[in-house]
Image (cartoon, rainbow, N blue to C red):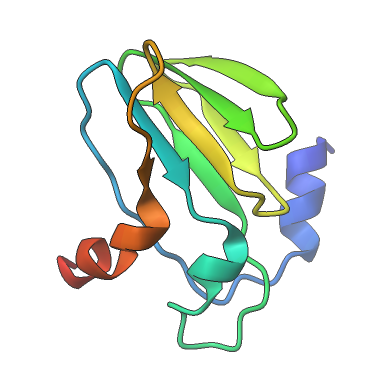
Length: 109
C-alpha cells in the first residue's frame, strides 16, 4: 500500500473547503495556515490539511523555512501540517495575504 493510501485510511475527514483562483503572471499568494482555516469549519477542527492543485501553467510553493518546490500543470502539493506558505509564479510581486480575504472569498460560495 502506498503512503497516501495508508494516511487516508486512518484520517477521519470532517469537512472540506475548496476554492479556486485564476491568476496571470506574475502573482504571489501568502496562503493561510491551518489554524486560520480551521475556524471556518462547523466542527471543532483543530487541524486542516492544505493542498494545491495546479491545473494550468507553472508555479512554485515556498514554505516559511525557505524550502521551495516547482509545480507544473497537473501537480498536487500537500501541506500536511498546514504551515503558512507562498504560492507564486514569476518575479517577486506584491504578495496577497489570502487570510485577509478569506471571509470575502468564502462568502461567494
